[in-house]
Image (tube, rainbow, N blue to C red; front, side, top):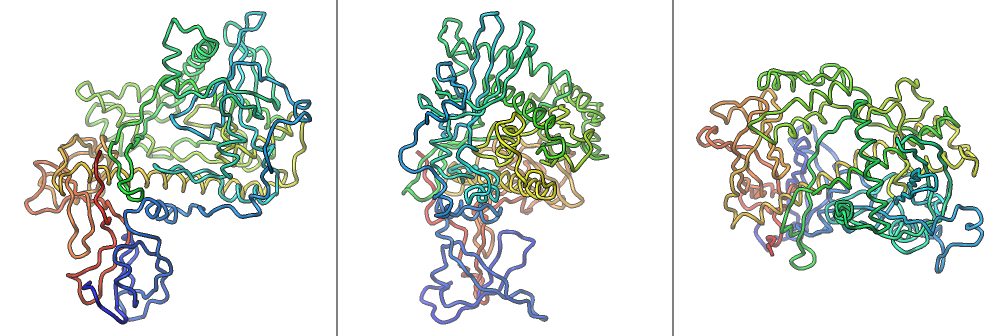
Length: 603
């Protein structure tokens, strides 16, 4: 679009989603939109027109701006991200908060115990903490302490209504969209170090064989003696010379957690794989994206230790509530795979390794996953575990009155009953379970809403929807930052080093190739290939940046080395994958709505 054009200009708006047709706009502000993300509404689709007609209703911001790109992701995934209302803020405690004497009398005071939390680096919304100590009878006492969110989040208040609507906190690469106001998530509810905090705790006494001798559920007061990063906790566990109270507690917790994990594996729990990355970097001018480093998220045995204890507490809470309220309990189940879900994957595995994955039970599936190894390719087993997740159903929340008890089973965890109790700061499901558990142990009553199965079913449906959208938003954010990272690695649009890839899906017209190093998947038309590779075949992928014709959209282009026909395009992924505006008559001078104003720099 030439500068200086005045008056109404007819443009074509191209949405990000290719399933949506371009939309014709008429505007006097075409030049002002040249580097902006916009929202468009369709008004009409005239009978003899190739395109619907619409108008733009909002300018989201400048392309490449950190806040703008986050807003686009949140809007696309229907994530509530507005500020909390005054009515919500009015629900928060006023003035300087402290533990009250009234609550001290009501709760078990555990502030003298060596309680610690173990979380990802930089975590500020600390939901859970643990302790382990040796009793006088030589048994071990373990406590899982969960932030007592419901002390502050009263049912049917404006804050509760808003939390139910949001249902979950949403985690993007560079930000978190809270389910609850920050005063609670990072302060009053967060189990931060050296501060008195209210908790909902489960205590177990274990004998020398790790059998539970007795348990206790109730409200407590704790004071964390350490907010540890997974890596730091691991160092303490691995150091035989560290005999501090925290280290001794962690070592006991680790030993018992390994027992739990072995027991779960014998019962058929699945241990699958996913690709998670972390990005480091800084803003060029405090506004534009600049991911300067990308690494696979590092895990430690300490990660598994915490996971096992959270699973153990979740199962305990589920059973306790269900025993008291079998018709109203909010639970979470994972159905077994659908008929034929593994057929395509098994055909490829059988061709390559002469074996098949047996999904008859979770135990048989886990055993066959352990055997699915290619000695020539160390990554192959991880790949199969990633692809196995795509063959499984999604876990779902539900009200216990909705389905028969025999269908409560969680296939992935191999558990007959399960719920979420351990993350009430960031999940509304856990808030509901906290309220139900409090009623089950006799310290509160069940509300009318929780006894209304129709209402509970609606709440479950919303939580499932919000959870899925939050997962999508997180993946979109990862993909956005990966694109910026790769562009930062390329020299003025040049090539990125070749990488190993795998064919992970085949359709009638395309193959889908995953590049594990970057977690990126692209589809390539079969007609562009000299030879179509098999499913699971390892290929060499060439990645480069190109601009796409008249729309000037920046794309990552994937080609298979030695397999492409001459002149073929290859598979593409949008880096700036948002809407563009195309002047209706001047296609060669199109305004780009996709190229960031500044190219990210590397440190």
